[in-house]
Length: 173
Length: 116
Image 1 (cartoon, each protein chain N blue to C red):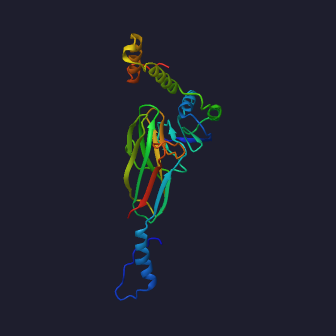
Image 2: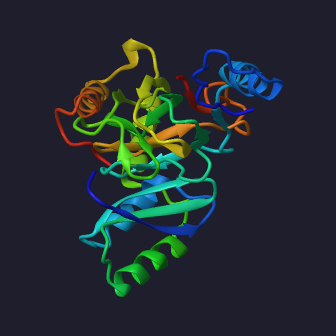
Image 3: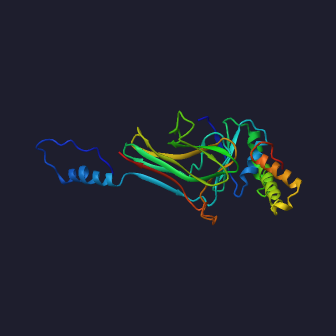
């Protein structure tokens, strides 16, 4: 059941089952189960990049898509990263293939990386001003030097590789 | 975000560091980096790449041999081998061993260029 803008009731009007279903039952159900998308990506191998410009990690599989009712969306990410040698990494999230949430900054999160694997997260970010409809959220990354890796590999047999890359989005208002 | 487009090629089993080195070695001004994952290679370039450069990139990806290590990987392997050779009791260390260790340490800390 979707969200419907609640009715403004009029004094003396006959309240029908249909009205109650739409404006009370269905809206309560919609609030209980808001539009959500969560990707727990197993890439069966590491993602890598040497790009010094922000690019999508995986514009097909590491992308959270949901259809909203026009409210704010909360989005966040976590994954395990390393680098071939000491370098810095910048992460960001792109909305609908165009708008970068960290616009005005280098990105939403940055981390110095080395050969040891490190979990890096983008904390929950509220995205306001989205029209009702389908919206996509993609993880972007870039390095300042050496090759960087996002580990998401159930085939590796190594505990530090065998973890998903998690990208989640949920409408929250 | 400066605009880049992806040249997407299907190519499983790559050595990302070596492939990046090979693509950078082509000397294509529009080249901005390479990403791998899921059996795909995405070469990031600024829009308007001439067809000859596209062809050169495709050919480099096709002839890429993942078994060939990158310069950095060769240096790391040499460093590991040199360290392994020093794994002995302290009284057995010669002046040459101490000098070699100091050189490795200085390279590791970025004080001197790494030797291959």
